[in-house]
Image (cartoon, rainbow, N blue to C red; front, side, top):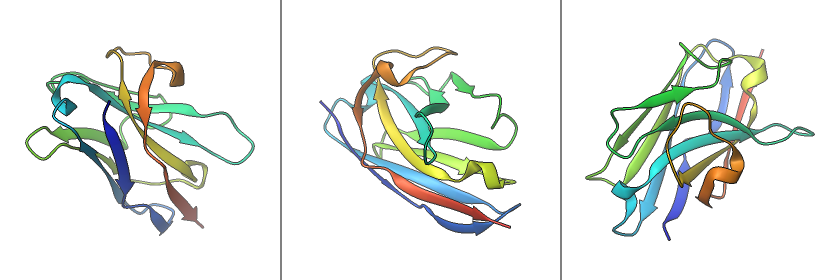
Length: 124
């Protein structure tokens, strides 16, 4: 199983940008599709973005499409989430996940392992 550690969260003004990173340990990183989820206070964890094991396929939640970009570097065992034009409603804890498969529709139950999460707070 792969272990995941997120970083890059923080406080940013609306309209600003942040890049999250997720470092994976283990030799099997490149075999996994990877995803980002988020959870706001009082809400369920929701899908944000996913990327196939090769990086050739990506999918996004409608709420972030055109603003967020997921990418991966298999040589560095790292997946990224570039977040632009941030909105107040993007405030949440963001979780990295290793996925059991890649699809345009991903659910939390599709995760094989999770990181500990990183807080993103967007202020007005």
